[in-house]
Image 1 (tube, rainbow, N blue to C red):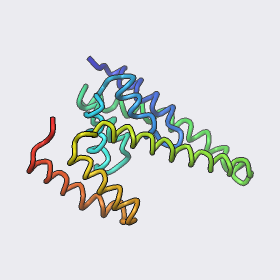
Image 2: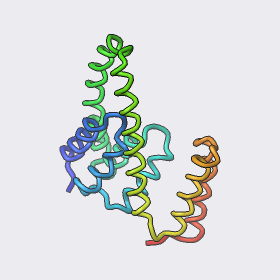
Image 3: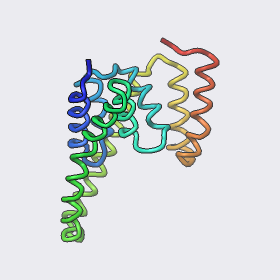
Image 4: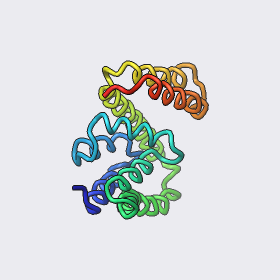
Length: 177
């Protein structure tokens, strides 16, 4: 049984590790370390969290907190997720103005951006492995990638079209179990 402490500590760790974003850590912590969801469930839940307004991980924290403990679980997961980053952000912002013009700081920010891109690509690969074998899910993923990355359609417009189409397609033709 998942406790309030489990939710808080998992999301606190996520918030603490998530410099530059938590996309690279969320799957590892939620699936591999804590076992809150299996690979398939994670891909599905993250898909839902991604189409809702707001940050994906915040949405996932709300969804998992509610699933396991209701409104008090939501509060535990959100407090865990946001506490460390808010405290760190306050500290960094207070120092940033003093050092922002330094060339080393500029280079460090460029390196952080590259590392973040690598984490996003790695996470996408792991999610693709989870939906491998589901031809319809692969079509949706490929179409979304093509629309946004290749044809450079705006993300919001692409999702506004592809999400309803994918929901209708899965509803009309059933879901692979």
